[in-house]
Picture 1: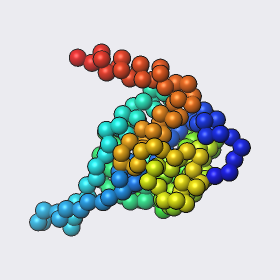
Picture 2: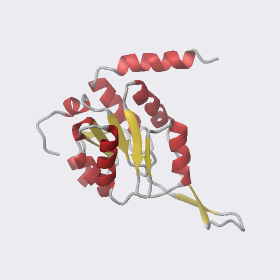
Picture 3: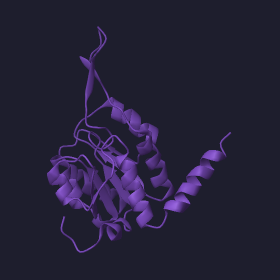
Length: 190
């Protein structure tokens, strides 16, 4: 993505981090099992999530960054994970990711340059273009990587969201404090 600001300069302004699910929080694979006989559903969808990405949500929160997901698919598995992570924004079944992104900005009272989006495929480009920091995961499609300000060292489902959070918090000079707070928060629990 063309722009005069460096990725780190863009990251310093971020107060909201939004992301896709399949290919970002997961490796992009979709698994379906037949539903039990008599169930109203024909299949049950399940996904795998990386613990590093889960921890990154806690780290972001400690750093004062709100988080949320915008995904085209709808899945009870994603709803469960979002509740577990206590995400501020959860939007499933979204066709217009840019419109949803802009609506969240309005709700939060933020400017576009204060929000980032993490994506992996072309459907994510409109949301990536709408914010101040566009992030692509390592295994993103070539078109997505070309428009990203930052590409994560890890692939989707393998800690890519953690890379994005670390990049932002380090750019903001908060990383060390946030990690110490996270460790302290965990060590005081009996």
